[in-house]
Amino acid sequence: QVQLVESGGGLVQAGGSLRLSCSASGSIFSITAMAWYRQAGGKQRELVASITRSGDRNYADSVKGRFALSVDNAKNTVYLQMNSLKPEDTALYYCNAAIIAVRDWPVNDYWGQGTQVTVSS
Image (cartoon, rainbow, N blue to C red; front, side, top):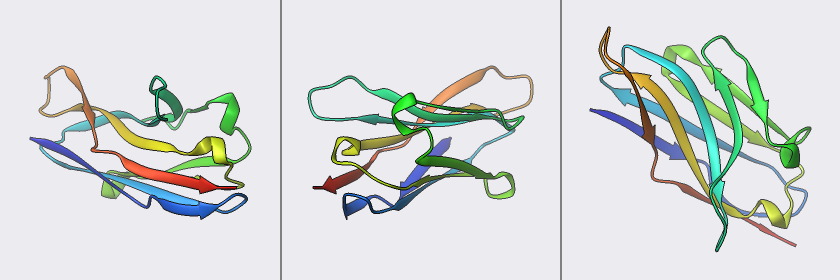
């Protein structure tokens, strides 16, 4: 069993900052990639940022220059530092990880339960 646990969401004023954390635990042989998605009310879930095991990062155009990913491989944890937050960043943020649970097993996708980020104007 693999679990992803997110934390760090909350209410912040426009221009403020938040840091989200996502920790993976359980049967983990290897994590090939981790990512943050978000879903605002009535909209489709969208990719915010992702990072591969080799460290390649990818950001949505809407967050480039404001959000930054970092990883603590020893803790199987990914962080999303969100600065200069805007009201349009308000959404439920989900952690996603591509994980090989046991050596030679295929990669499976796992999702966290989501953490709410609300940015007031």
